[in-house]
View 1: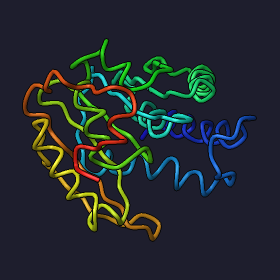
View 2: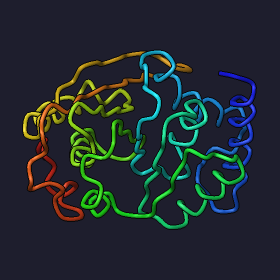
View 3: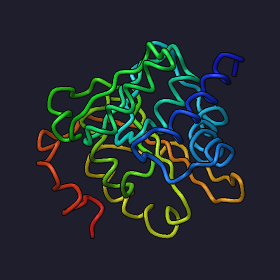
Length: 220
């Protein structure tokens, strides 16, 4: 990480914790640096070698987590930050402008709607604190290119329950788990899962808005 990236990350913390619309419950600078920034970038700096000039989608970005920290660390990757809530995307646009992030495109849309016009356009997809693993897999599947990668940030429940849902779902839409990283960060159990898309997503996906939540592929 160079000095400019470090300064941008610090500036982003100031912006998000002081933004007039409440985007995070964390208002302490040090805690935000741990929970919002380091928790977002650590697995990519530790485990993953991303390629430049690729397209990266952050689903349910909220106030830009993890998309904005990642876009600062990887300035040669194109980031699309997607969220269905307009006021959150308005904030992301403000942050991107203030930080002069040329590699960020904020989009206000439901993921199911966005997928229909952007099939197989992304090399990488991620989501943080959005939904259960099998649901995230379904959201990502139509958007990823074949051989593209999905990155999941997960906590303690991944091993105890979510992994089984994920294994059931990935058989239905041609994914495989290629890496599973367990680590502790600031005393918290973390899991970082990397999945690869091995085949074309069936034409029945994306399903209609809300169906992935009501009838998840991994079961109830």
